[in-house]
Image 1 (cartoon, one colour):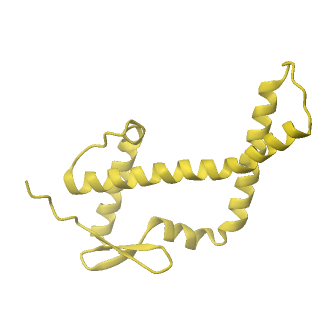
Image 2: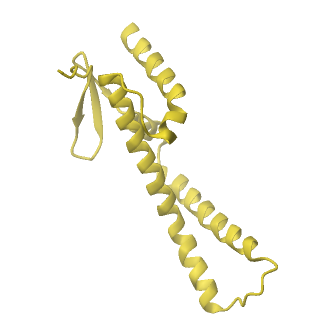
Length: 141
């Protein structure tokens, strides 16, 4: 069975970003657009990372309330170290979800296959709604 030719192509650029090419017209990726709108992401990411770290440490300490434990220097160092690594864990989890979502969207556009990934499938009605309206607006103008 022959696969359908995708309705778009992806052009990768040196800085790690990419553009979508639809009918010969180059469009920036959503990430590129958000980067332009959001300006300097460093401050926002730093705030997010602090929040995630503190929340993890707080949750862990609350879970230990009422338990017979000794809070010593090693315990504090251990929970702090894990808390500081938590943003990277959350970032990797989100990146993995994003990759799986992109793959599912590509398969849907090219092969009209629904995702087999249950987590992605839960989000797919909204994803197909966005895709449909994006393509409608894209070809309208």
